[in-house]
Image (tube, rainbow, N blue to C red; front, side, top):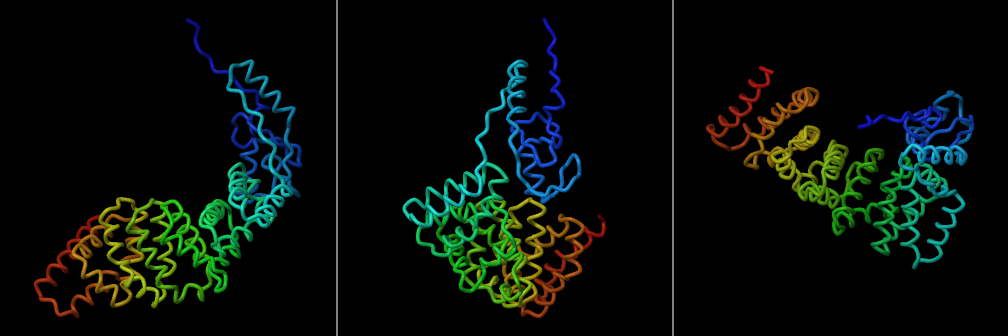
Length: 367
């Protein structure tokens, strides 16, 4: 029986970035050939402006298909029983995208089909996303979301926006007073399916992360209501963490805390603490609870929940040292203590609460 042997791939068939067989060879202006997927990530996702091999500055990001090398690799694959690399479709250029955008603008009936084609371009490669942005696709997509005339087109536009790398200025447009984008996103959170609601909450998280303080202060009550619904519905782990991070951005502001409490955030956060084993999610929940306990309404809601004090004490011991110290520094426990002592509850009840936190403190000192 013949021993199996590993075929060595010629070095000039390997991508200098991944050191794997090149599947779609393209050449940059320095004359070095790379696999398209790897060099596009280097240039567009990581925002590099040099050739990885020569370290020379690239004054343009044009990627020229190397058809000769592709044919050589295909022939070598055939001779050595390797899976033959496919002949890839030529990349879409900016002029083709502009044509698609104009077609969608001028023909509402074909708008949804055009959006699907644009999304296909974005998914095909990083350069496709880059060309979409250069052609003004973001402005067009935001206009569809703002008008909110067709739910199918709106949801397709939101999905495409979520896949693209939006600039800070684009994200701030979501929150402009006359933009209308925030209204549409809240409507999606309220009436959309699970997938669209997840997209909407992730876009809102990104928008509020770069928002000016004026846009954060006094956020709308219905926004907090929908965030709490996301936490309760558990539509996905990614959506839950996006909702928690959004609350972290919103709840340092006093009026926002009260709106979050009125929307049922404290109870939803405690229920999430009871059910989740994800450490990062627990850290985020404790951070938001700390913020909400900065107001009397938040402390009262935490005390009102049957398992609130116990689960907070337990989880503080299990999160990372960094977050544990953050909880002690912010005196989350002391906020609750002072509220409980000031209430009309009997001494026996207070003793039970004190025992819970005392045991937690003792366990923590042993770590």
